Image 1 (tube, rainbow, N blue to C red):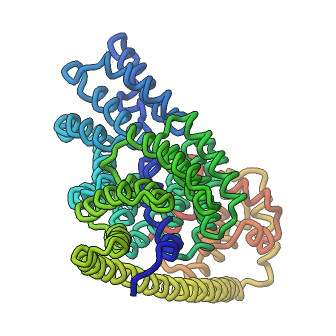
Image 2: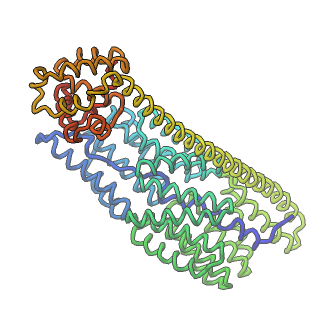
Image 3: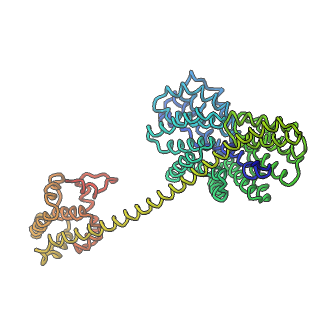
Length: 576
């Protein structure tokens, strides 16, 4: 059955804009570090260190104002040549490439990365971070250009390399990059898997920029799958994180994403508020892609309210702004769709047909059947209205093919998404059960350990119970350890230590062999610590003050030769 234009627009219209809304912050949350040049303070090293610091500051400035960061980076690149210093030049090139990503200049990103790739691949371990930046930039740029095969190749290289160098922060960004690429390719199940891994690592490592970008990308996927409430939740979380960070491009992107959900809910007042904020921030930062998307969304609002001339003006401004970005990148057809729908409302069918054919050609190139399905349906309706039966039949057959492909892909994605949610829920339940079992098992083991230790000490001391308290108190309150060998109670302490041999057979002899200068009292405290008794418990058992036990512990640490950061109990437990 052929759907009406309004029905298609309600369910698919905003979905066509989904891919472009990831452009400003796909997975490029990386920072350059002047520490690549070590800590040398020689006269020759200072220029390199200062330049490296400047590159690092440019990377940070990118989060707040990409336009200024781009200007500074271009000025710096004019001063550097690849023949003078490979590492510095490569650092500046990668900083520039990621700034271009924020500005959606995808072809320029590929060009810059291709220039730097041979040099970066020849660097030693100091170039590991630059390799990650290179693979991330190439993977994202190719994805936004609709070239998914090289995009996935670079993204997989990024994941493999991050795993090989065992850098969890780079791996976190690699997962985000892989998820973004799969999302742009409409492989939502795989995309959510990678994005979930990225989100978990980002939260664990405190990578707020990566966390916010991941939340936005997951929100876009859920919006495409028509889970608008969940999408709004993710977009709102991303907005709050970016507000705390002060990332102006990120805030603009989150506001635009939130506005798209309000549009689907027909809350046009909130749409206008958020879109105008996003547009203003995008203008300040020089992010043309967000400017164009904001104008386009405003055009949809005015078209919905029956103001096609105002809508057409906004769509045309969006088209003009997008041409500053890259007409070959994903997102341009969404603007053409808005212009086409407005022209049809105004009765300018010939101009609309020309744009429809452009969108179909784009859909063939980038394998986006949802674009082509609507276009072929519209061309069929126009041909039928003109009475051109042959042309109408042709477009009807084309529409049937594209519509079938679109529905199959959409249903497959929804099914994959549902299976993924069920798997994640099952794994989450199993994880919680496993954690509860571990906690219960740990409690049982601790109880049994304490009971075994108590019974062991009681067994060892039962035969000398009449003088236990008196001996312990006398021994542990001696004025100095040097007086112990001359004290009469030393013999009784020796008898106690002999009884303790039943608790830890051979341990006292081994301990004396490793630390020969321990006094009998210190030996007893070592045994109790080895049995994992706490200082307070030892003090109660020996009827002495905890401060006395602390004093003995310090003496033991000194005789064992432990530094302040070493753990005494670990040391004692490691003695066989």
